[in-house]
Length: 294
Ligand SMILES: [Zn+2]
Ligand SMILES: [Zn+2]
Image (cartoon, rainbow, N blue to C red; front, top):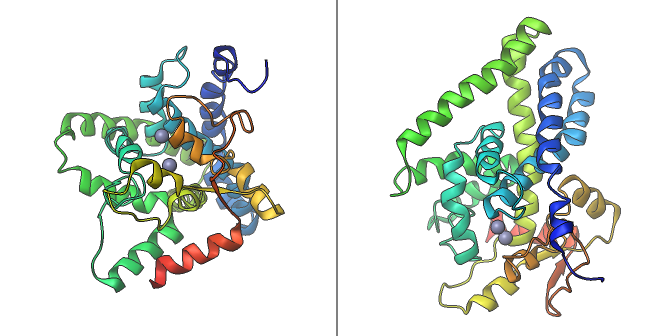
């Protein structure tokens, strides 16, 4: 039977939850070596592909394991592990993502607007520019400082994550420094570069979907989520971007209208709402311009 996401189809996704981190760990282990030994342009090209593809795959699965879409895998453990691979304290994303589904397209969505509405125009434009140029790493650091005050934030959990990050990134560091003879400064710079490139490409996918769509909380929920944008795969640039980000933005509205169904790996399976909004990069340029000028 066509056009149905069966439990078998969903179960078939399970292996990706293990394959992606394995590939990311192998690639990430050699980033400092590439940075030290290859031309910078070659390293940056490799950071875009396969680097950003693997990075956004981990972000993608981090999100899917939050929703526990594949019941046959240890979602909670994988969620924590993905968070650590992304140098996160996973409790931050655990706290904020529910709000993205409740307060979609309002200032109260703290996943997208950790600081809420910034009244000063210049500061708001500078903040938006930080988001555009530095991506999810920038947002994550700000969200962390905001979420510390949340009642659900646990310092004990933060300490466990901090220790896990020391062990994980300490191992990556030791491998590059002692085994591949990479200078300490090159290790750190190459990691920052990878996180900015991966996090920026990843975050633009989210900005295509929700960037600068701000409605009042009193707007009916259905009307709010229907303004979520979807990227139309019309040109080469759009197609390459969707490939690098696992088609995250192509049918994003379905993730809000059919949130309990695992829709995202199965493009063209469920019908899109007739009034779904599709944009191209040409339209997206206008969104970015408005973020830094209006
Ligand atoms: Zn979600
Ligand atoms: Zn969304």
